[in-house]
Length: 343
Image (cartoon, rainbow, N blue to C red; front, side):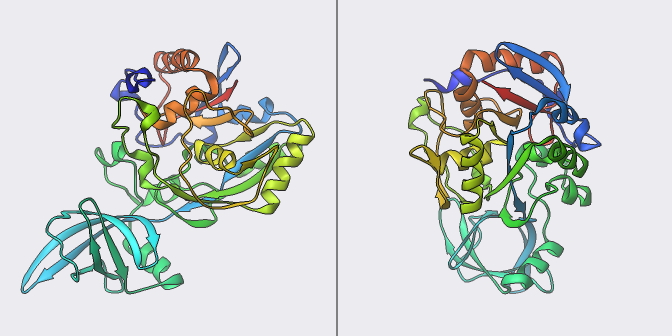
């Protein structure tokens, strides 16, 4: 299974720089069996059935991109930091320029937020901030920017609108440095209408890391090592999913993050409560134990997420789906359109 098997040509004009407005007006490609239909996200209210259960990732994206200054004597130098994940000593982070930073140096981001470099490695570093808990969250909210994906950040800066656009309406638990983007399409009225129809919801938490954007560097994809991300499936969430399966309903994760988490929590015959890191890698040949379908955006060529959707639908089928999406002008990636994949 070669990396090139998951490649496709994508015109740059199809990479979405902003989300659809309103959110539910985004297009929705529905692939069920061999059929493909071109609808809109708002049509989920008609598509889903009583007894279906949507699994939602309630992680909250933090404004993880910071711009600060380090000082040596009278000289000041600009430093760009992207937080990756919390550690016992502070936060692991990327830095530009990394090579010029030294252990023990202090970076000032604002009058209330500074951080000391406590460890430096070849690719990243660990920062100990002067604030913790709610004070850190508040200072970070004022000093930080939303960590837009590289393919957007390379073309424009994050702004105030992104603080709303790059956050789901059910974001509750802070810790992600990338959004669960399929969930960005939901609006409050949709949740109300779906619930009235008999569609149930279960919330899980997977703090999406910056590793989601790392390229696959091996040609034999089966040798790729996934980055680990922290997640939780509560006892209540596991019980709800198990009850839906037992009743013959469909369990439909919204986004690859929710899918990876519930598959990580799948035990013999049922979903178990789960808390901790998962590095599950789903590629063709994987046997799904929980997910019956998937709502997801359109993914990068040669990415692990292309491999995941190919595991669900079959590689040839995914190539036809993506060919259709390109031909029909669907908008791609984090702020783009969505698909409902029903194997």
